[in-house]
Length: 442
Ligand SMILES: Cc1cc2nc3c(=O)[nH]c(=O)nc-3n(C[C@H](O)[C@H](O)[C@H](O)COP(=O)(O)OP(=O)(O)OC[C@H]3O[C@@H](n4cnc5c(N)ncnc54)[C@H](O)[C@@H]3O)c2cc1C
Image (cartoon, rainbow, N blue to C red; front, top):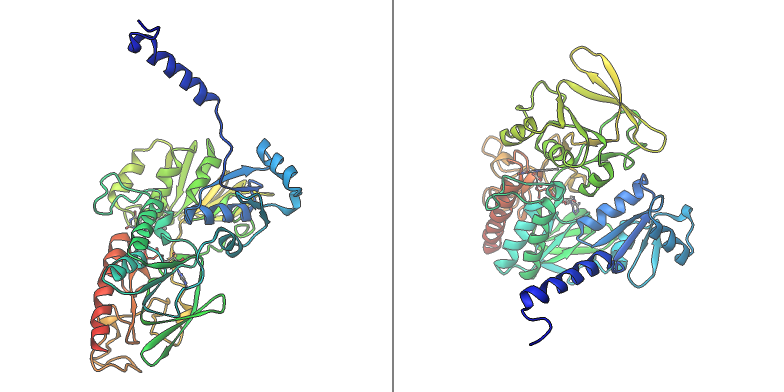
């Protein structure tokens, strides 16, 4: 007879209790990258956003409130004027580093391995990621170049609920992480952060100029550079950007506004998702919508969710006209667009989801764009049955082909595209089929 017989009674319970005690008191030292800075420092926010969106596990230590932060400052000998700092697992650190320096230190890939590829994709949003996956899966030697972080706009979504195959929805970051893993599995080379700042045509080659001065060539190029948020011209807003005022706020910011009073500018799906997400943390979320109804710009499912959420208020016909605060957003002024009356209210944060525009200056003089900068493709290039000026091929442009043969466009940056994750992914896949047709004709 052993002292722990029967074990169900005399052993398992004791072991469970001991394990519970151990788990409650065991706090292993964090081994990854640590960011130490001030809560309201825009640069700290930028660094955390960059790390999070590039899937780098990290710990954020607020120097004002965390004992560990003070301890790290002592060990590294850094004073507060050098914050934010990024401390790496080997004990080295960078003070006030730009993203490129952090990327270099972390070994993120920013330089291409080869001088020439079958296909180069610019932009790793849903369209670019899809094209890279299908291109490489179909045997094309593929390079994907991303300026900030994989995922694009979708990477900022807290929950995408209308993407096929995910009935409970998934976060944009999760979608991007899965797509990147899939792309790598098929052998796609991914450069991030790296920006394409120019392109030229040299016979059958398309040559891209990179922001670090490098160049890379390809047989076919896909522009999937999406759209970027539109800046609001509101007094006080620029100064407090990153300090309580955020364009397309990082989801990690939600924890900073527990029990806060958050205002969200915008009435589209992105604003609606943010309202739903932040309402789980904040005491009150108020949406400021310029128009007279949410239905004009938001999917019904989101409108219904918002209506059913007690701590979200929707103020229609409302615009923010001023933001104030000493070091962080403290108050905002709201104008009723119908009556022109104004009201100043206290605000823990102002989150802006007020539309986006393409940034395609790097394509100026190369491919045809519309007045807003969207890239024109396919039948939209054919005016009165005539092919675009300078068109060299003996055929009409393919559906997603630009005014230069072999340069394709997909997703939100395309003139008259449907916009959205699903259509971006669809266009990315379709672009690869057209690239094959193009290469087959060379
Ligand atoms: C918060 C939010 C929530 C959303 N929720 C939904 C949703 O639920 N369902 C839905 O269908 N849609 C949603 N959308 C819209 C959806 O995310 C976009 O339609 C989609 O991401 C477009 O994909 P894209 O690849 O065409 O462009 P983007 O996602 O804009 O990606 C373009 C990428 O190109 C990069 N890039 C740009 N220029 C360069 C350059 N010169 N060099 C290198 N890289 C460059 C950018 O950094 C970016 O990563 C949401 C958008 C936002 C902002």
